[in-house]
Image 1 (cartoon, rainbow over the protein chains, first blue to last red):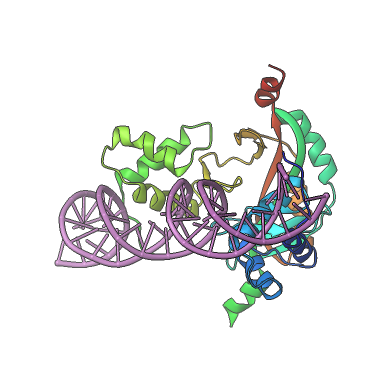
Image 2 (cartoon, rainbow over the protein chains, first blue to last red):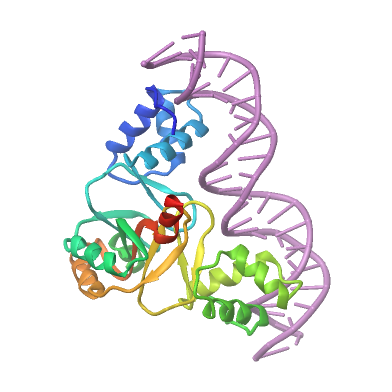
Amino acid sequence: MPALKYSRQREAVRHFLMTRRDHPTAETVYTCLREEFPNISLGTVYRNLTLLAELGEIQKISSDGGAEHFDGDLSPHQHFICSRCHRIYDIRIDGIDSLMEKARNASPGEVETCRVNFYGVCEQCTSKDSA
Amino acid sequence: MPALKYSRQREAVRHFLMTRRDHPTAETVYTCLREEFPNISLGTVYRNLTLLAELGEIQKISSDGGAEHFDGDLSPHQHFICSRCHRIYDIRIDGIDSLMEKARNASPGEVETCRVNFYGVCEQCTSKDSA
DNA sequence: TTCGTTGCAAATGTTTTGCACCTGA
DNA sequence: TCAGGTGCAAAACATTTGCAACGAA
């Protein structure tokens, strides 16, 4: 792994994700950053998202079908993913520590992190049904 | 949703996944089924995998980067995913029910299913390090 | 006969990469 | 100066889709 060097683009990507409550795709990051950096390229956005994820400064969320989403929130939390609109909601439940403890005894390797996703239809989509 | 009609290809896809202990990608399913059906097409494999997943007869696993994986094992279980070789191992831990119970109180919608993934480096990769 | 299914190929959508130029240390 | 970073465009992948022919009910 080569030494890192400062770059305004990478900082912008990181800062952008930190200030978002949702979980943008690379495309969204690109589109929004273009206002500040009219010349930034999609390739650069991808390179930095991948790099930051490897550094553990952001999280990559493989939701399902379509593009990957990114999460700048590093605090432990889980996701509720709507099967209809594919929106990703943050939720927080406890007991994850004990879950990881159990996993350590059942895994063929060292458990480092854990991702918990719940699926269902969100209220917003449910209420559209009755309309 | 239109009425289903029997198809040998779809049966073969389902049967293939049921008898596998690992979690093949569409490409792998395609390659293996080609021995039995030399003319089966990748498109057909994708169509049937998608269909079976919608019917809930198989599970789609979005592991991370690269292609999706599919799991024919419907019994409740979790996955340990090696960050190095990306292999997916089945593990079984209890307490998932109570986790879902907690999630119901914290989610912006009806919780239907839950996916728990653990990440780390598997023993096989770890032992290669010391070699 | 009807309508879902298939094979094939082309199209789409997402992410990666090669390369010449730019920039931070 | 020099290794890392960037923009751009092309390439590489993964997945979906249009369509004519095929096959199950």
